[in-house]
Each structure stands twice: as C-alpha cells, then as structure tokens.
Length: 139
Length: 139
Length: 139
Length: 139
Image (cartoon, rainbow over all chains, first blue to last red; front, side, top):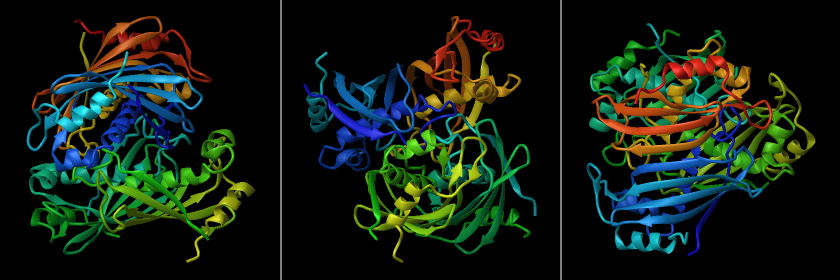
C-alpha cells in the first residue's frame, strides 16, 4: 500500500533553548499528518470531531529520535497504519529532513471514541476504517 | 489600588530560532496572569468559561517590547485594569525580568460574552466586575 | 503593489478552552507569513537568522480581532508592508477565513538587528529592503 | 528514594479541539518537571544549557495515557529516574490530576551531550549524576 505523505516547514518558534525542534513537537508534526489524512474525508477532520463528535484520544505513544530538526528544515512525515482493531489503531509517522536524513519515528495508538460526553470507546465508522485500511503498512 | 502580580519561569521550549522568547508568547504570559486573577473567583476561571459559559474574547491588543526574555529568566507580570465599561475592559500587563528590566507592556481589551452558542456580548457579571474594579489602575 | 499571500489550515491544537484560536496565535500566523516572505530570498529566512545573524525583533504590535477562527478553518494571511524606515518596518497581516470573513488585522513593527551578540540595530541589507519594497502597501 | 514533585495548572491555551490537553503537551509537562529538577543545581538548567553548553536531547519516549486533562485541572508531575548509565538516563513522569486520577506515565530517555557544536555524547558531569542518583526510583 502507498503511504500518506505530508510535508511542512519547521517554523521559527518551534525550536527550544538548545536550538533544535522541541521533542514534544514531533508528536504534533505526526498529528498534523493525521489531520491531513482525515482531511481527505468529506467533512474533513473537524467534520469528524466537531460535527460527528468522534475523537481519537491517544492511549500510547512511542517515539525514537535519531537526528535533530532545526529552523529552516522541511520535514516530511510519512504516515502508515501499522495496526487496525475494532476500536483502536496504531499510526506510524516517519519524519525525514529535506536532506534525506531520517529524524524520528513515532508510533501513535489511538482509540475511536464518541466524545459527545465523557469519551466512550466505539468501533471505527466505515468511512474512517476504509481510510485507515488504504494506508495499512506492508511491513 | 494594588496590582495583581503573577510570576513564572520562561520554559525551555518558549524561545524561538533567535534564542529569545517568541513575541506572540508575551500575550500568552499576560493571559496566564488573567487566568490567575480569575482563578481567585470561587469556581475559578474554568468555572466561568466551562461552567457558566462566559468568555472574554480579545478585540484589541497593543504590545510594546523593550527588552528580550530568554530561557532562564523569571518573568513577573503586573496586571492592572486600565478601563472598565459595561461589557468590555482593558487589562494592562507589565512584564519585567528578575533582574528588574522592564521587557514589555501589553494592553489587552476583551469583551464579556455569553459563549454558549455564537459569542454574544453581555454585561460583566457582578463578581467579575468587582474583581476587575479591585485592580483598577491608578494611572 | 501586490500583497504577499500565505494560506494554512488551523491545526487541532491551536484552539483554546473557549473552542476558538487563541488570540496570541494570530501573531504567530502573521509571523509564518513573514517567514514565507523571507523564504523567497536565496538562503531563506533561516539563512538570514542563522547564517547571516540578522534578526527582526518586534518592538510594537497592534491587533484588531473581528471574528473568531476555529479548527477546520483555512486562514489566508495577506501581508503588506505599511512603513519602511532605515532600520525598522511595519508589516500588516490581514487574516481572513475561507468563507471570506475578515477575522483580524495585525500590525507588526520590527527592527533589523545584528543578533551575533546582544541585538544591535542595523540598516536593512539591500536584499531585505528590496523585498520589503516589493510588498509596500498602496493604502 | 523520594520522588521530585512539580505541580502546575493546565493553561487556557493547552487544550485541543476535542476540549482536552493535547497529547504532545504531556511530554512538555514532563519536561517542565525536568527543568525544575535541574533548576535546583547552582546555575540552574539554563546554566547547563546556555552556560556550560550541556544538553539532553531525547532519544526515546514512551507515553501511556489513562485519563484526560482539561482546562482547570491542576497536574502533579512525579519525577523518578528509572535508569542511569554513563551517558544516558531514563526519567519517568507520572502525571496525576488534582482529584487524584492518574492521567499518564511518560518515560523519557535522554543522552547527555556537548552541544557547543553538533551534539556529541559525553558522560554526565558529576553534579548532574549526583542529582539524578538522588531521585533514582525504588521500583
């Protein structure tokens, strides 16, 4: 299956006092790729969250950092879905710099929830599941 | 009248690629002082926003920057209320570094709104007005 | 003169507890447009800041907020240069939603500085000045 | 050994479009506890980073999320050091809400680096090692 690819510049205010992108921000970059993926649905991601009141709270994250990102880098986030269950899935974000250097891999496990009130686990709706299946990792 | 004073450290991830606190962050520091001020109400600020559905969207901001803030600085935010109308007020945040250097002054004009649906201007509730009056600027 | 136009989606984590984009973030959106503008120089913005050690600390900001931005909105930032002096300039960012609603105008006055050590005011280099002149506002 | 405890309020702008603290922010909360821990050294954390040019880039992070944090919550971060090697260590941050609910556990593995130029692995200086040892986890 193909991967879903999202590209963006590192912004001026995303570095920390050591001059490199703050480690927590890598999760945000991955999430932007997920927003872009769900943005391909009719109604987009906010149609899911705000309209249909379906959310995807994180339950587990694992991140491996290999090389820093700096202001001026363009980061490419390659998104694959490594696991799909009835109510949860794991997204993998592989971040690379524009010079080709792999910088980090983030595994992001989320649970599909009805968020109208207190979050309540629900099975993935058919359209969301189909989208996740379309980017299932081969490896 | 006395001012309301709020103090906090500059965090590791709040500087930008020039090594100083990002200019937009100064508004956030001011807002934290406002959160702390409203935190003195029974029910605190989130009691206002989430419980009573009263919000204070900004309508105007003016900021003067005199000296940079850096990671490691402790910033003191001195809050006064320079104007109070029926539905709007202007908060002044004067930011100083722990070495005494004045770094910025931010004027923040907000409108009291019912935010249950689309924001709708309403008069300040009595408890909010009393709190604002208690920190009215002398100058 | 034409304006410089920069467009980006409101991200999932950019709203506040009232459900709208945090007021300080509007300055960050404007700054992203400035980063994109300087990104058209050979060496880009980080070439200026990190390479040539030229920075543009803010000295004054004025923002008028007219309508909220929410997750799911696409914001267009229209950048013009309203004043250019020897060492300082004022950038104007007009933010509109994808439904055409004007949401805010931000005036951002910066000073051109040598930031190798403590920031020291310097005249705009010729390439920076030429770029600013190219987007000078007509009004 | 005792744990190092750091407490802070969830700020107004730290929630996402689902109304809960953004998952990446939990890492930032943990990092604040680390900043506070290193803040107990003479020269504080910025003395390490900016003065002595010693940094601690993340190499691995694992986070388990159990319950959401919301605006208005006070979060307590309990920091222990679960591993200390010659050049790397693992910090554990256990986050709890003011109602006692455990919300997340974050494991943060960092490498001690000379960051004067490109980051270069170095053994922990004696004062940093002693500080880490003082908060070594019992379990």
